[in-house]
Length: 191
Image (cartoon, rainbow, N blue to C red):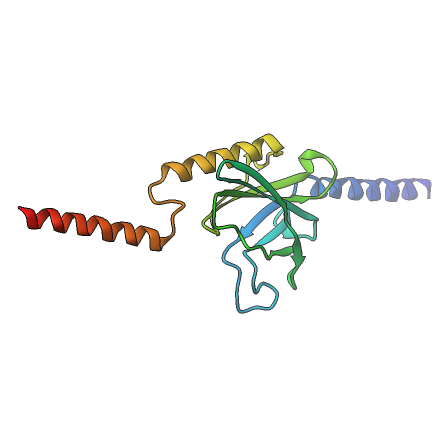
């Protein structure tokens, strides 16, 4: 009888300890763009945030900030996320600024430690999402510091400054092309 109870306790312990590693490991974050404008759960959202743990959608807390550089001035705004009808999916209804360089630092957190989080860095230009990065190390997310977010913002601002036409509205670009066309046409007439 003692052997049977001991065997059952040992078997239960093996089952409990055997399932513990499955719950271990960091979460994952996914960004969905564009959000479906036809569904009430995502209508009006700039993007959707998906929180995962080992590929399974989970309701981990999501938080974030918008970090911007506008005409040389540093800006920061908190982001608010709303739950959607889908498990582990949150909507970000946010009017992204059309001026300056902006990154959104969006974090899914399953615990209090830095390694218990996954952060997506979302690059914004002219009010639209232009890129998403989830810093990783090995097979999982890498902890992201405020310095990492600042570095991503500075790199994004530099890439926008270096890209021809970036940061200008299509109307200004078309007007500029029109002026170039008039100058070229005038030069050809003089020949």
